[in-house]
Amino acid sequence: MTDFAPDSILVVLDVTPSGVLSSSSAGLLGAAAEVGTPVALVVAESARQEALAADAAALGAAHVLLATADASQLTVPTVDAVATAAALVEPDAVLFPNSIEGRDAAGRFAARSRRAIAVDAIGIARDERGILAHHSVYGGAYTSTSAPTFGAAVITVRQGAVDARATAQPLATTVLEVAPSGTRAATIDSFQEAEATSSRPELRGAAKVVAGGRGLGSQEQFALVEQLADALGAAVGASRAAVDAGYVPYSHQVGQTGVSVSPQLYVALGISGAIQHRAGMQTAKTIVAINKDADAPIFEIADFGVVGDVFTIVPQVIETLAAEEK
Image (cartoon, rainbow, N blue to C red):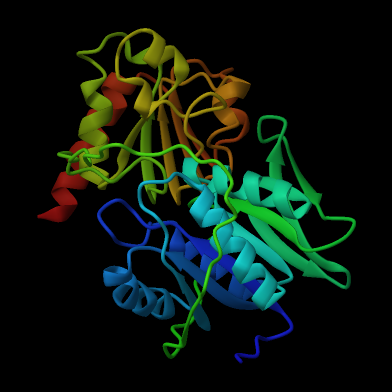
């Protein structure tokens, strides 16, 4: 029987429909390594388990638990596997990615096991009583800390919020025997993965983001945001006002009712900085704002601010970036 470290942190890793670990995996294992010994759980088809386990070890998992789930059922098989893994490891906390699938599984597992749950954490820590979760709240105006009053917390971690990375570990695996709970689950009749054709990085989890607001004026002029994003190798984001105006699709919306991001660099073009928008990007490591309104709220949180016309300033920035590449 495998003995697990007394400070083990169980990390549930997302597997994409194409059969690889989600880009959130490195941050989750890095966060776990900061406070304990990362033990990864991978739920996937048996044919992919060996490769996925090797990838998890390379990202810092001290041990990898493997479980096979019925691919036609949603969430419940994953929760069954997490319950089995938690009973075996007895971890100090259980970490999930703050993805749609991760939040669903985390909530179900917390309810089933009667554990406290902390959602959308931007970091975790440990004190003498156990694991703590840090949150950005009130539109990013404050950072709060939460902790369970008993038991190990279930925590979902915002992708991109954790910079720490764990050291690669030798591969050590255990195959779990998971007894189905019999809980009713939605089933998948058919599935077809959508192919992404964009050369830009995915908005959620991108290291760099260039976002535009209503100040761009039109869908045609929003192309300036895309040009700067391409020059920086960044993802494209937008405020709700720009989305509502039809400049870009909803999938680009950053904010309280859109995507939450924590990139290394966030460039805001023509964005006033309403609290709903700031809630989704204020944890960015460096924020650069360009706006002709010197009183725009975005300047309150910007590390670097430029008061001026984006249509004058941004082309000069793009030109300078292009010159430096030559």
